[in-house]
Image (tube, rainbow, N blue to C red):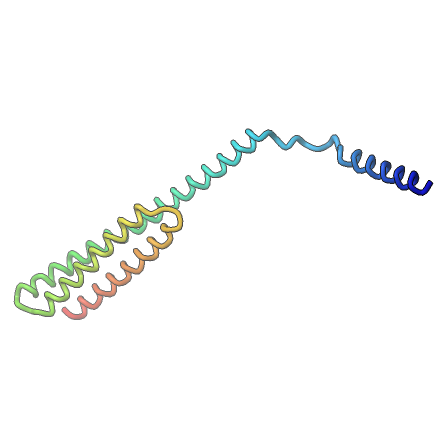
Length: 144
């Protein structure tokens, strides 16, 4: 008798759970195709945002590089004149400035080619190279 009572109680509890789980007010979750389309749209949106951010960074940093290049060209002209006049220190300054300018151009090209995790690293390296070039320009101006 005890076994029948336990079995009947178990069946009643199982039936209650089954009825409780069959709530007709649930909204349909969507098909696999709909979920896949939604996921693809989300990924595409994220990719487009990343491309847009990269383009913004690249344009801003490119403008800064061009401004540095213009400032450097004026300074380089003065340094070249002094180097031609026989000042050895001016020749060394000229070589150092040219080396740092080339490094900035290289880092800018790397930034433009970078993607994903390498993008942040390339941006940081370019900013460091630009800071070093600005410092070299300031030192060259002081030396002249």
